[in-house]
Image (cartoon, rainbow, N blue to C red):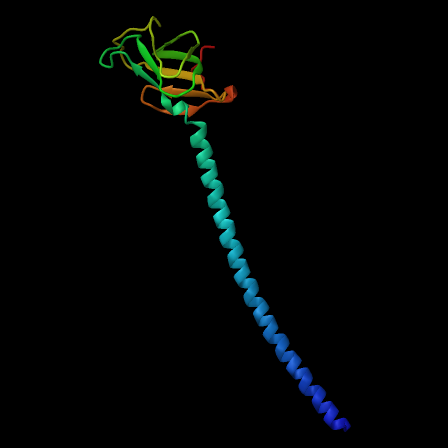
Length: 172
């Protein structure tokens, strides 16, 4: 084998290897780009899954509380007769009614309401009619999981645990 032929063969082999290196680099880049897209999709799916889990946990957390209701005994009248109904399958504890009128707050003694029971709170010392701001009732209770909740006559429900975040309407 002559020196010229060996040099030419080496040059052709080097060029072929360089071409294969470029093709390999192109495939590696394309694979990297596709993998990056797939990782992005997995991250998005994981984020959606986390949001779903958090929403389901909030729904489970409030499941019992959403089945405890407060209503006026006679909605057309202003009296101190307030009904609390527990339609959940577990008791609620530390049930307390606060009737808040302009310049005055009346509270019931804490109690327990068993599943399926309806309790009428009366004698809170409130009667109407009221001038100016209308009074409103606030129901606070602790569910079987130990979470403290607040429900208003208009149906609003919110978690108030821990107590440090409880509203300043309390006369505790």
